[in-house]
Length: 81
Length: 491
Image (tube, rainbow over all chains, first blue to last red):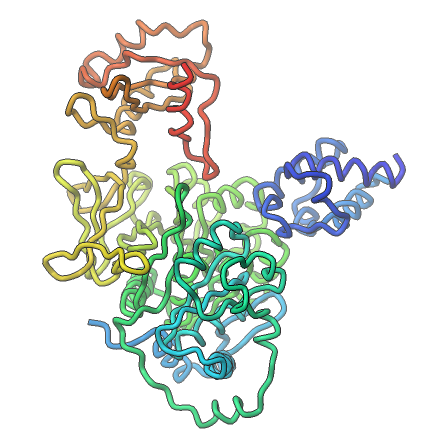
């Protein structure tokens, strides 16, 4: 999977979990920026990322995730690149 | 009788602990002396803008040091603080602005598009707070503090109300001080305490916890929501956090997601106050397992009558995990004989809704509020909340508490979940049972009726049964009874 398709897959997961429109998404989107990205949806988002990429993110890594960039960086850390 | 005001309460803490940490965030901190200085400078800026006693100042900020500075600066000149949530809808914001007619609105610069009514009174909050004036510095140095009358209005807090326009709850200095003193006494807060407050400061729960820290000489670490958890755990490492007030949703996050880290880093957490929605006994049990050295508190109250009763569930033990405790000092909690509705009266109770929708007063001359909740006391005067009065069903004059019925019949072994609601057909209210069976094919209405016979009164019997796959839930996770009534209409 190349980086472009990973980015696109992450984008689709975020849009789907948060229930937002494509035009509300940006690569700079971060937790708390929009009401939909709240603490509960954040947990669901991490779980969905784990499921769709077939990985298990350690809780100490999960708390580092605060925006789209962090999700991509975490995936790289788990050898998804 | 309270003879003080909120600013004086903070001033007394400042005099006693000038160099002690008052507030912190992930990137900033202030000791009491610095906090006081910042409040004085900001109140001079408000004064320069012509804000005076009785004026309403509306502002919107996340959980930051600036929130507390601005709030106390508004109070210090005798004006009325109207904090609103940063994520408020445009409709509700417009309704609030029309309602309170603020003389100044301070918020993020993006709000210039949100403010439709009186946009000319809007000022970018960051420009306002960062402006520096040497004259103001001089004024602060020659400052003398004048008390605000304790009965004066301090804050208007808007309740989120699921239906209709938000209502502005009027809270005086005296209301709030009595409430905060009750919190401090019950939770034994003192200057050794540091609470990590992620709750919104625009709500009485979050703001009350910060008051409690500041007025007891403790410290508050502010963070906006349980979102950036790395900051939350870093604060636990850096600030020796002793308290973590939260909601049942926050408890779920601790239990299901962050339990391991709370166990590792939350060793010093002694106080866990939980409110905003009922804490379920299984949540209390799980939370206590994760943080065995913590004292779990719950309280009962509304914005209109905050912290009316308090309980330490840890002290009371598992058999009492459903209680919300006993009435606080000076607070009268009574239960209406006919309806079972809980009424609260006392010095902590708001006088009413802005501007002139005043509550009735009790014989002791305190406001009295009918809460809309149904409850009962045990022999020790511990209060238990059993339902909402609007959910009460009236079957030919017999009052039926749906929660009480659910509790009894839920024990039937073929039921996975259940909700009982009332609905009027031809002006006559009838009782409807929405049942989620373990398996649809094994559920027989007649068997269930037979089970109920003798366990509940005849007028509560399940004559209308609707089998359903899942009960609808509202945003707060509670059963959406309104949606169930809609289903009856559709059928």
